[in-house]
Amino acid sequence: MVQYQSLIWKLIQVEVINPLMLLTAKPVVYLVNLSEKDYIRQKNKYLPKVFEWIKTNSPGDPLIPISVSFEERLTRFETDAEAEEECKKLSTKSNLPKVITTMRQVLNLASFFTTGADEVRQWTIRKGVKGPGAAGVIHSDFEKTFIQAIVYNYDTLREYGDEGAVKAAGKVMTKGKDYVVEDGDILLIKAGAARG
Image (tube, rainbow, N blue to C red; front, top):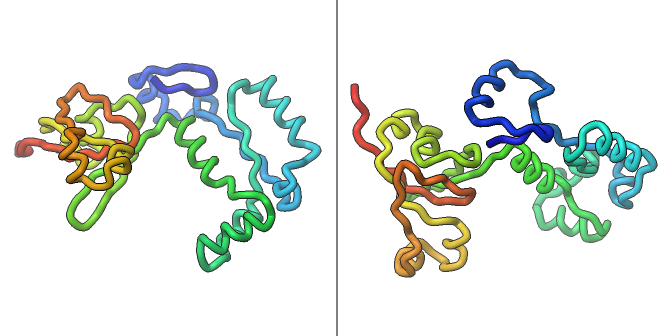
């Protein structure tokens, strides 16, 4: 299920609605662009009025204050450490991570990873997608010929340190077509040969 502005749509309905590009059916996150000064001090005389309007007219939709000029200024630093130091000096932080996280939640998105000897790839899916649908994000043939997925989660990998330790602890699972892929899963997808 996908939630849009307090409405819940079934995935089949989303497939019909999305091509119509109806703005009123899209989820909303309100980003309020503040001056750098107002953002740093977390005060703006209009912010409470905007919040009240959202509460009345679009209840449940998130409001995120941000300063585009401040975020742009942070990009001019040579390193992330210098940008973090500037934030510490001003007793503030970038709000871009919150914007990204909130957008992903509102859009009902999740990520899974595939790994190889020389790369790790992140793939975006809708929450609630089963193994074959996730495989189809990589290649449509994988969805059609999906057999199973070898699965462990990134949190498990962090806890145990490396893939060998995860395997040794018995935390690697073999899942079939009904497995609902979770956010942060690491998948090795096994698929049959594509038919001509």
